[in-house]
Image 1 (tube, rainbow, N blue to C red):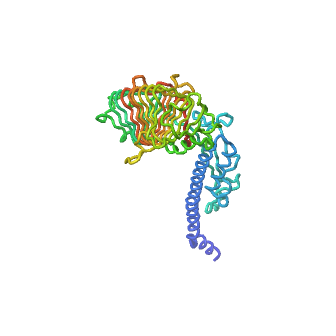
Image 2: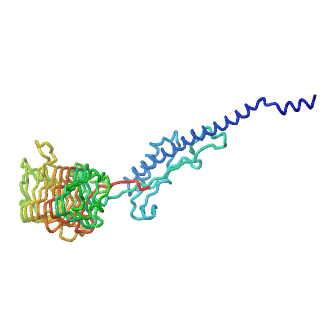
Image 3: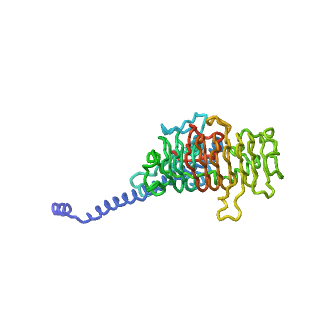
Length: 450
């Protein structure tokens, strides 16, 4: 009887399903736990990366003020990922300022020229805020340690140092030459005729070259070097959007409190602005003994005022509420001209030319773009420069169009940003200076480099 009971017990399969059920149950819990908890971990990693990116970019705007950089980065991180729910994801010790070395993908925190901010955000056990798990506790895992890092850099695009950037289209007529790494960018495309040449290192860019580049018969063979120069790029002329602010600072230097100063160094900003209310030309103004000053001119209903032929003007800022015309033979060095007049009654008020330059005008010092001596135009509408004007370091920011006339001697240093189109007439050579236009003022751009 005893032997029969043992045999029956050994051969009895009752309850086997329960054991297998428990095995499969544990397997399904593990698979489900892996899916749910891994998804939660990846979600936290994505949130941390977005927080790191936003914090670094926001903090980079405060460079080179280290205290402000750190405060901004931590504030953005806390706002993006609330402390109550996620703990403190960004500590002050995880914010670093330095110079970004693109060749080594590293941040030099000892550099005297900081241009970048690195932040590291964490949800880790060491930081007392790991990402908890639910199902995977069964297999002994209590939480995930997750972190993310970002580096934001403040920079000036090379295209803005010596180049032509249009929010609309860059129109290039025949026979132009482009040298010394100059850049041409049309956010809405580039149109060109034949016999334009592009030296190695020159860039012609737009968001989609396949659809936005227009050449005769769709062929690039008639423009030597163009295929090698073509790039895909997105670049907006940001200074155009800031023109109202720029002009306001020129009229009232007390507003010029930012990191990047609008008022040029040759102006004594402590002296009051000279308000002119009854001048229709510049013969009565005290040039050049009135140099180092800002002139704010009310045209009293006159549509245009003229800078007389043959006059020399230097070391002044002239802000004017009507159009301004520079007559033949005038010479401008270390000069800012700014007009905030727009067209009345026109279908597009920005098409009005409020700064025009006649033939044989000297713009900038003929010193191959040495520091200083340059000229800047800030226009709330459009700018037109006639043929044979001599350009030796010119910056143009116009809300409307920019038109550059024909000249045989070329253009030595130019930075142009247009809110609409840029037209380059025939037979120019651009980029004769190796480097940016002098007296260049530009708004910093920011990008993620890591």
